Length: 285
Image (cartoon, rainbow, N blue to C red; front, top):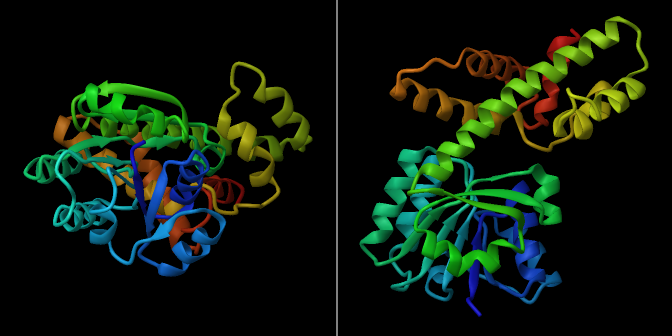
């Protein structure tokens, strides 16, 4: 069995790592904040690496889940110092296609394969092992790690060459921005009509306008509960990536830009670490 190491125990990474551990794949973890890794290890037969370099030299597959492009490249450059030839790196972060290609290029010098494998499904999907994964890279490499990925995801789709997974995630994030705008605006309108919100959400969720966001976040947002799921600050970062990719392609994303600007207002008001459903707060002000 391939030995797996996991780097990045954030909101998504922690749940994914736990599912890897339960499936018996996970051997090493590393987190920039040691306390998270220390709290993780007592529940599982997993070792806490003291550095990225230590983790990289002791496993066959390195999984990475960090927040930003520069964070990913820092991790890739660091682990490339000690990673073994013929190892595989699977990146679950949301970064640009260009960054994914750069990471693959760095690792190619070490004869290490790279898959960009961003995910969708929220914290719930990460905790329940029901994520969707969109994969860029060599299809043969994907097949080598597919059993590992299946412990975290119920849908794994090979999109194409390196970077195509991240391009697909950009599509997802653009769509999520539009859904957020539509759902929060509609529910804010429902409030002005003095409608029973629980009944409204219940009936619309199973109709043509139904969607995951309405079903999972409708009641919480209308009750003023914006506890962290997918953070406003992170979606804001993702939409900036989408805008840069669109600019390079010569296309405009007006709804994406508007959502990014709305998120900037939310961040300024202290909602950066809240779930993106906090957009409802702006609609009902």
